[in-house]
Image (cartoon, rainbow, N blue to C red; front, side, top):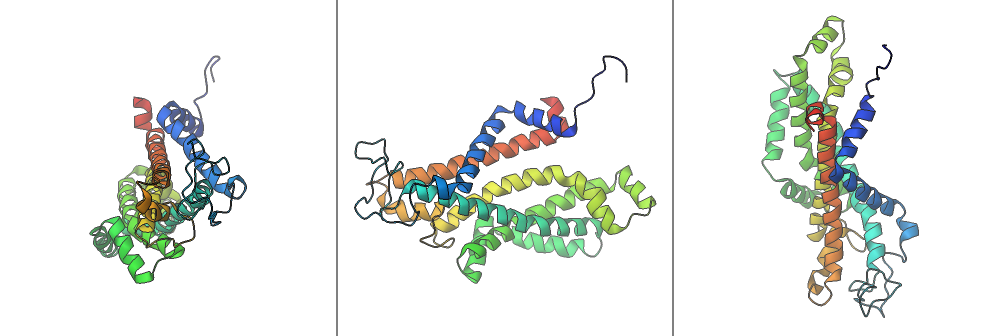
Length: 295
């Protein structure tokens, strides 16, 4: 190396630099990190048990209002339960469902997408027609259909959301893999004697990870929204388990008398989903070399 020459940054360092250059994504990352931290530390941060009822403090306003109490920083709901405690514990439920649903859709989606790309004559038509049938229904409607069959509950909510997200992963992986199959490095691997499984998972899949990471991030926010929607409809997590959507559903009758019981959970959902979407945009820009150079 010539004197004075500088080493090119590592791929990870280049990614971090590009992501940090996007201020919106960086702020969203810290907001989401705060939500995750609050969910992880909920048993220690929550001032009260999320299902404990203070019958003498029904619909107490937040602490910054005239009738508010310091022991209930965000007020109480219609049953006298601490809103802050329920939001913190509800974050654990919503984030867990979102993560589990993404993983449950991602793993089979990757496998089916690779199979559809490598076996285009006989297996691809079968897989893609099944995915087309699933795509014929909107994600939330499909989730409602699955919940209707399986019944409401935490595990069934994860399954229902994952089924709706599966076709997107299959189509994305298949399209990315087909684009990679025509490249020289795949041909070289075939000539070198690599088997189909090695070509799929060691050669092609690593080069499809960038769009997969971005799609998984955006699917995570969609899963949180669908979880809240199912909870709002009474088809998701059941009471008294704290969950953001079910909190909105229980509080809708008090929107005029006690607007904070609706506004605070709604804003929590909005801020969390917006932060994840902004992070997804930042990841897309940072992982795509063309967008990185263009910025």
